[in-house]
Length: 428
View 1: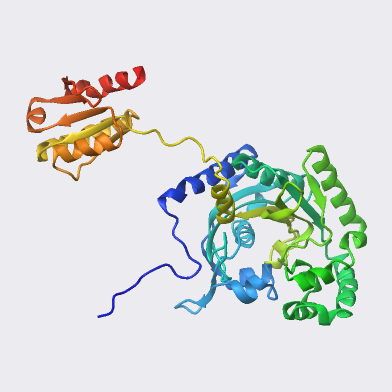
View 2 (view 1 turned 90 degrees about the vertical axis):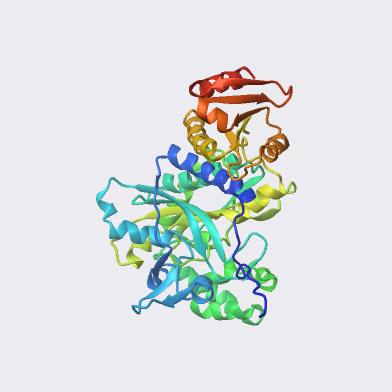
């Protein structure tokens, strides 16, 4: 019989113990910023009706057209593993009547997402993402607050050379006119576009601005700029957002070709990129923008919103490459609890819990019976004190303390051991 060779599916990955410290660091940074700005945590299901994303993200987007994991359930429902977080949060806002709460509703999330794309460095088919969403307020101050929070998280994680790229993509009043101008420009250069962009030209010419193909980048460089065609309302909104960023002294540059690749975006869109010393972009870390039409796209009333999200694996990959600090290590145990015999093992487990209640870290090896093996383990861990609990000690209610540096041993009454060890650790 052939030997089974089980391994991860392509694009999936295990988060091993040595990586958990990075995930914990990112979550702690996100949670700290979210709490300071009075955001509340939300968790949406991993599975949603496929239509939630088809309506919100757009049928002609790569996410819906190529990357979603979509299938029918045994009951016949067409469902998708969530590829992004904003649409499910808005679905939850509508479903649970959050418009009745004081507005805006400020929410944050963190969790796994799924996209069927070509795996590469920092990109996986199952990945983790965190995000901030503010729903129910259209004031430009919200846009700048979301940008500030995103920037704060990256600074807290240790990133230094950051720049905010920002643009406005208008709204339903001014964008249709700009699309015609853009379409006319690209039609005259159709043969210079990649096959995907030739298709996008028919469906949504704005998508061409988001293409990363080099040949399309060259054509894009001469394209009309939407900021020159904004309606009065969008122009005023964008001007105020930039004034807020100026006041906050955040480093930003106008990128007239930034569109973000999802249908629900309106007005402000932004990305925070890391830059090299000569100012070149090294890639996007966080992106987001305003989505004032999303509620209506999902069948709700007109409700403004603004948010941002980031893939954690890419951020963590850079943190590991740069050897960024992940914070203080968990306190190493200075005590090892060794035991011999079943009665001693049972009582040792109870004693171990007493140490835990007292918040004193203690190492143990309950699975081993040999005292010699346990002392060898304690020695490898550079532990100073070993508490030896054998049959005699268990019967007579005392424990033997051995100083591993001097070899000196002493007996301590069982009901005094936690207090005495606490005192020894504090002195050391």
